[in-house]
Image (cartoon, rainbow, N blue to C red; front, top):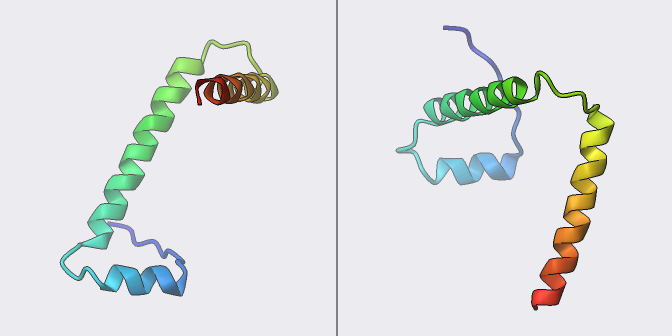
Length: 75
C-alpha cells in the first residue's frame, strides 16, 4: 500500500482527536473511493457530450439563478 500525506488545519486535527475511536485513514480512503466512483460516472455520462466546460458552467449558473428566483417566490 502507498502512503500519502495530508495537510489539514490544526483546529481540524484537534477536533479529530476528540474521536480516537475513528480510524481516519479508513474514512479518508473510503471518501476518496467514493469521489473517484462519482468522477468515473460523470466522465461516462458526459463522454459523448458536445458541451464545453464553459457551456456547462453557463447553464449551471442559469439554472441556479432560476432556482433562486423560484425559491424567493415560495417564501
